[in-house]
Amino acid sequence: MKFEAIDTRQIYVKIVEQIRRYIERGELKPGDKLPSERQLAESLGVSRTSVREALSILNIEGVITRKPGRGTRVQNVDKVSLQESITVLTDTGSPLEVLEAREEIEPRVAYLAAKKATTEDLEALESVMDQLIAASDSDDYPTDLDIEFHILLGHATHNRFLAQITRLINTERKQLERFANANALERRDGHIKSHYQLFKAVKERRARDAEHLMRQHIRSIKSHVLETDEQEGRIG
Image 1: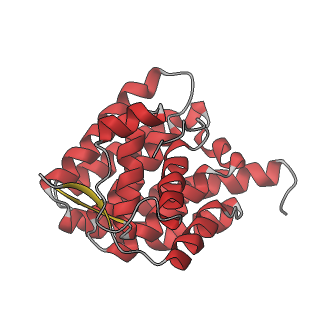
Image 2: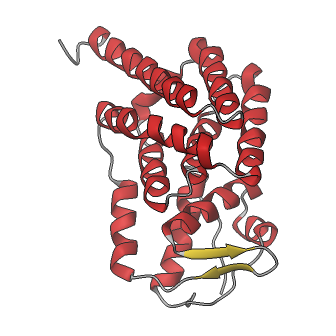
């Protein structure tokens, strides 16, 4: 079996879809062991971070199982549910729909993450947080890292349904071109600061603070999107 090189657009989504296709075609069967992160990254021509994020998504969905010392193996997955996941993943809604969903779900996700995050979860969040801070002087807002941070928070709830919903709505926002307006460079420092405050609240187990900070964060983005739409004559 030869893995194909990945288009750089939406890298981790492409990796997820490619692995799903191999499972659907029977080229990867339940119990089969996947190559290591390093081997997959080299074969696909992508970074290990993208591979790790894709495997995290597949693990949350129950498509694969990952155990220390035993590697990553394919689970027994319903092909229909796989196809439905792909449809949800690639269907594009409106920015407001995505933000409304996030406003209802992600504050609770932050609350539960503060309660349930393991040492491993916190280390993963801290790693992404460090990269976000390091990117504060870059020419572009690090949207991929922003999204990875939120997906990791979902994973830290240790609730498979919440983790998958968080992953879906954050994957969806990545595909909304207009969402980039909410992450304009002039707002970058504020976004990175709010993520740091969130991370600190989760790390210190301040669940109510984490919930409140997430709600504030999303409402700020929503307000900016509405303001942009009004200026451009889309609403009002």
